[in-house]
Length: 372
Image (tube, rainbow, N blue to C red; front, top):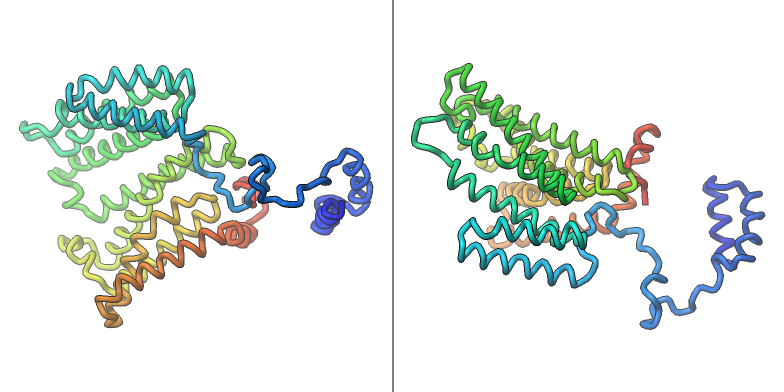
């Protein structure tokens, strides 16, 4: 009862309820045995799992992949079966197997991890068939035409797969394929207008700006799904998870390239200058990674933190080498610093997020995932 009284007094102190309501709630909850009778030993082996306290640091953003080792076992069986079929029948056998397995495991049993595995298997099948039958031709057609032709099968097949099985990853892949088609079409039109056989090499700054805009577009779509499910309880959150997982590195690396081009200029040697390893480049990477981590904290998506770890390690290594640190120790120092950053952010995620989000306007806070 003392714990219940303390909790009610704390709620009143934070303004969640009034002191008068706290006084009236105490006998009401006590009579119904709410908040009383907590087990003396919380970690007993005989204690049911459901009685464990919820961990406030628990990740709420990832899709629910596994309901038990049954899902893992089924997924292993899928991978082994499809690998065997691929070896025996090339690409002819896997597609019927994917459809049959999806009917049983996804449509009927609604197994999450096998659904992801089958969606990835379908993507692999489409890529293989596209490369074999629709791949680059020797008829002199433009690179972007090859890109568009090879991407064409993705949207209709993933649309059918999502319509039938409602797998969030398939919807995310459908959206990505549409963005890829749109991007290829934009580059193709620019090539027609300018007469450049390779727009990316002829206009590197313009190309990176277009790619950065495409990454921002996918981020906007991901946020559309995220903001419609701030409590992370529906499949919209799962779609947003997959979109953010691919969007975060796309944003990071296009932002890095764009910053480097603005720094060095957009001449023909830009791709050789990038990677030369300077303080300016390292500082630029650190700033962009910090911005990405800040975005991840605000929207409660750790993909924006993990996407920048490799770049952060490269930047730290560059800074250390510029300071004449011994090459035999640089890699270990980089690993130690990056590991420390990961631990600090991972352990302190709720606290860092609260400190960050509370600086935003109340109208913005109300649309973001709840603080924990």
